[in-house]
Image (cartoon, rainbow, N blue to C red; front, top):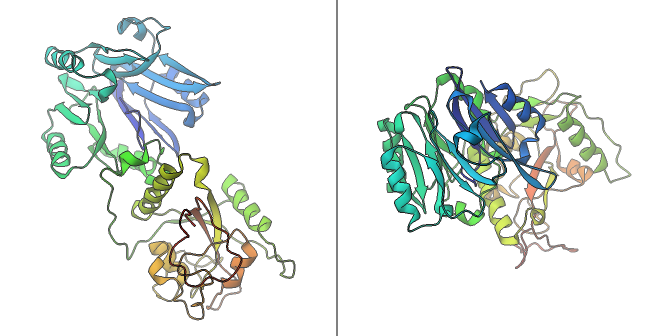
Length: 424
C-alpha cells in the first residue's frame, strides 16, 4: 500500500495468473495487466486527483481520489464483502495482499481492520494497544505471508528474499529514511523500497524497469512530502562534472512547444530590437543528480513560506555565449568539449554559482554574485552570443523558484546573497 506522503506511488498485484502494476507520478499514470473496470477508471480520472491505491491478487484493487471537492473510493467487485465493510464506509487506507489478506483503516477510526496470518495479527493488536492507528505509516502485504510495516518510524518485516532484508538493515544503520516498501502478492522476490530522498532500490522483472524508470525521476515527484520530513535525512548529491543530459526536439504540435513559443514572444519587450523567428525548441531532460538540489531548495522554500502558491516558480530566460553549433538545423545535439562554451557547460552541469561572472567580457554583475535570469527574452538576447560559424543564436529557458523577491532599482554590486527576509 502506498504511504500517504510519497514522491511516487507504486503497487504490484496479480491478475489472470500474471503480475500487474500501477505507477503514479507527476509524469502521469502507467499500468500493466489490470482489470478492465480499473483501467476504465484510470483513463477517466486526472492523474493528480488520485490520492491512494492498492493492488492484490486475482485482480483485486482499491483506489481513492478527489472529485468535486469530495473523496471517493472504488473497490473491485466483491471486495467490500471480503473486507467485511459497508460500501458507505469512509476508508482511509487499505493494503491488499495475497488471496484475501488485507489491512485497512477508516477515517477517524481508532483501530484497524484486517485479515492476516497469526503472528502479524498479534503484532498489530499489540501495537494498537500502545499506538494510534495513524502511527502505521505504511503496511505492505506480500506473497507467502511476507509483510513489512512502519510503526512510528520503526520498520518490522518478514521477508523471504535476503536482499530485501539486507537493504532494510543497511537503511537502518545509515539512518536513511524509508517512506514505503512495496511487496508483490504473487512473488517473494519482487519488491521495491522508496526512500525519503526520492531514490529507490528493488527487485522487479527486468522488462518492467525500462517502462517504470522514466516515471521515477525526481522531476516527476508528487511533492506531497512535508519539507521538514524530507530534510531529516537529506540526499547529498555528488559534485557533477560531466553529465550528458538527453536533448529532444519539441514538435510544433506539442503543448510544451506552444507554451515556450508564447513565453518567448510575449517576453520580447524591446521595441527597437527586431523580433526574431524561432527555428527550433529543445527540451533538456536533466538527470536526477542535477534535479535533486533544485527540489531540495524548492521544498525548503515551500516549508518556509507555507504554501505552494508562495514558491513564485517561473520559467525564465538566460543568455550566454555558445562556442559550437549545438541545436542548429542539421547539426549534432551532442555537447561540445570546449570549456568556454557556456551553453554546453550549463546543460552538462546546470548553473554553477562559482562560475558567475567569469565569461569573457561578462564580469560586471549589477546586483552582486549570483545566477541571473529574466522574464524578458529580448534582454537575455543581449547575452546570447554565438562564437561559431553559425547564423543562429541559442537561449536557455530555466525554471527558477523566486520565493520572496526583492526589487532593486540601482546597481548594488556588493551583494553576495538576497537581502534578509528575501529569497531572490
